[in-house]
Image 1: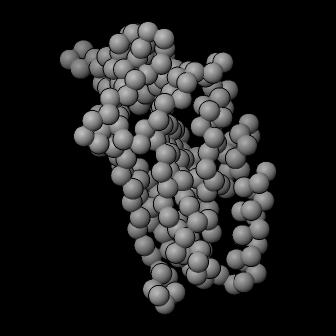
Image 2: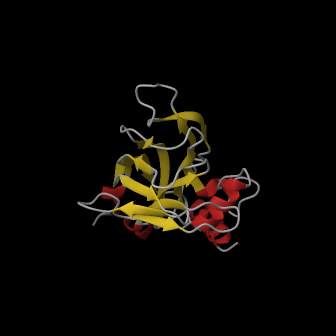
Length: 224
């Protein structure tokens, strides 16, 4: 293939299935997986102060661009989740929702532990450099005060921690992480809607010096 065919503006998207989970007596969550619902979601056992959590992991394959020594310049990165988050929880039920596009594969228990210490990937307490987090969004979800729909979760706080840095990696890792931090009753059910990661970018052929320096920096960050 002519490498010029890969140059220019492109759009990638990756769909994430919904997930339905139920809290068990031992404090862990059991996923409901049927007809593609919940496929790809994984559970994380509670450790220390970190609660039982669940996450989705996948990646965008950028190997064709790196094979032709092209650099990806993100222009727009976002997550579309038009559905509804629900939890038939106690009034103190709440959870964190974290979405990430990372240049390196993340250690999810570390991400959860950092969050419980009031930090996120790319922050001063994490082992990831901020430039590695191309897209990052954090939302704290709490129960609504609408009496007619008490199970609906609403956003209490939302923070963007994206770097939108150019990248030369072969895989751009995708994460949706849900961390229940409030008080949930046994048999509580949580619903996370289907969503789509969207990235608009331009692939550019940089000078040899710039490209090699970017590769070097990426290698150094990935081996820290």
